[in-house]
Image 1 (cartoon, one colour):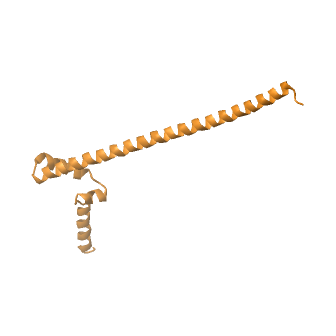
Image 2: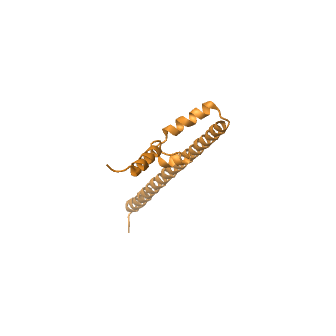
Image 3: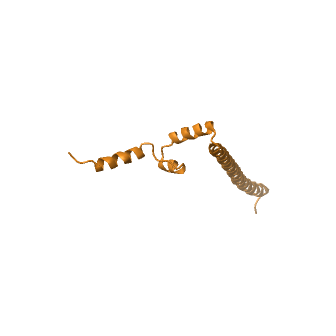
Length: 121
């Protein structure tokens, strides 16, 4: 027959085991909560970045539309701005978007054609 002290020790050990399990469960729950908070923060930041990009794109479209309308009206400032913009473009797909060729490409093509037609000496 177990003495009262032995029963109390077993009871204490059982309570300590339950406490340990509860602490582990609490730690797991806290980690999961922190993870959810980080994910929510990331999602919010991502949404803000997407919204900022959309707003920036909208501004560029509106500004471009305004400048193009002024160019059609033969506004001198808009024409000068367009020429500066065109002069700063270097990528073929950017030039194509404005219906332009590479600045030296046309001259290079003409030179290559004239060299091909010239007799060899």
